Length: 303
Image (tube, rainbow, N blue to C red; front, top):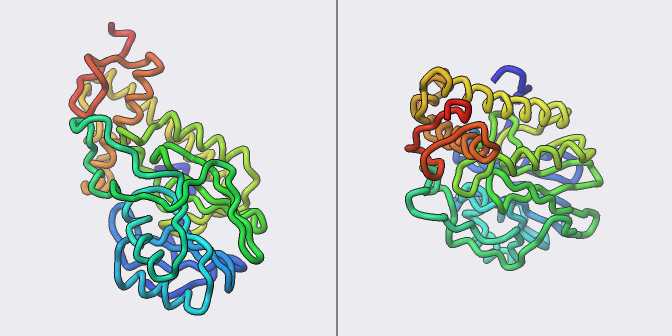
């Protein structure tokens, strides 16, 4: 993906706290994979009186590591960026251990219909329910720190980032990842919403992004602009593929993503679907019925 200044290097030991900014520690779970990269990073904001962001998977080893790092501290709240299991799976057990409420935008969105269920839905936590819901602009404060919720739908409709104004830092969950582009998987993932959320980030003055997966992103505006350019380029590539006679998503993926790990082709197909839903909405592409993974697509100019 030429043009995006990816950050591939990250130095860490799973389960061991690492200071990433003044007053911010990160502990990375031992759950590497094609969608989690080196693992899910949990952030602890503050000292003594703290907030925990994205407690990670339902892993006894990871929860034990978090509990050890938090020993003697008061956990004011557990904040969830969104309801995928690699971010929120361990929330309830950590809450039980430390007695803190779980705060999130809301429960996991329900599938519109079974036939739309994407291949990544096994990663969704349909049983998740926060103790408190928080909306865009909500402030969460503790001794020496203040966090602000920033609603960034696209990857999921309930996705939140959390700003730490003191450091001009933004905890970006999966909205922005330094090692790869974000999967936007229908039915709840929405490419139009994702692009609008990129504009929300461009209007901010953050100086560093702290994603749940991968290393911190410096020069964040440059990174976001590159990601937005890449997404618009994908629109153009898809239109080109249809013009060349590749009218099914699987055929487009085989041509457009030939150089990536085949384990990611399912996610790539969902990204292409998200783009096609956007292109059908704006009138550039047509299909018979609702756009889905099995549809045949054609350029609107072709009738």
